[in-house]
Amino acid sequence: MIVRPNDTPEEGGKYTVQILARAVTVLATLARRPDAWTLDELGETVAVNKPSLLRILRTLEDARLVIRDGDGYRLGPRVLEFSHGYLQGLALDDVARPYMHGLAKATNQTVSLAILDGLEVVYIAIERAQQEIGIQGEIGARHPANATALGKVLLADLSPDALRATLHGRELPRLTHRTITDPDALTRQLVAVRERGYAHDDEERGIGIRCVAAPIHRADGRVIAALSIAGPIFHMTEDVVPAYQALLLDAVAKISERFGHRRGVAAD
Image (tube, rainbow, N blue to C red):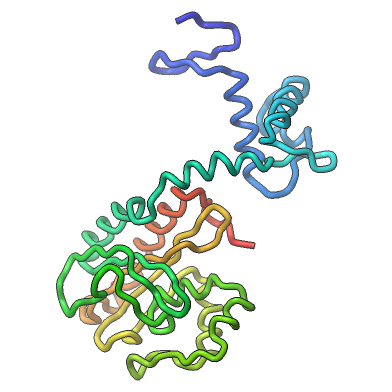
């Protein structure tokens, strides 16, 4: 292979095109925040001199990967074409399955993946590590969102207006004496769920069953699904739930990263 002046050797005999590597660095830097970056800020961050940086930015502008915003620069609309192609290649259950298997093995409890359909959660994947008392049923099973940790996590992502519309005129089913059936009480709990990033179900769907759930986010911070760990209360005791919860939060963060979400990024 001929090494040209603009090529930089790397370990293992591989080579990168230096100007292309710098352009990728510029794009990655612009993606760090929604606000525009000034030329001076970009130059200091990516360590590229101003003439070279301007050439990179103009090339990226021509490709609609970068747009000008006043005296600054931000990501352009065409970056969505690349992210869309990547995300289309990801099947939610396929991405989540290895993490679900790991959680089930680590906790010896049932791990479920669900999405929201109106006021119901629909289970799209289940990983069982024990067979006691049929914790979640089968794939495709539905349960009232107000009675499940999964449902609370998914409802908590709705805007206040969307939540009011979803709850308006609807009767919240009572599955046990612990199920929340008052819309105002549920709304207050959902605010807390959104703030802390997880939800609990303490015998609200079924007597003797305890569950913790957390959201899976897409790139813009919105919730696309929820993941839960559930088991009998004599296994899901108060002293072990925090440890299971920590494992769950780590798993959903890693799954969310596969869909382009960065930790700490909230939806608008």
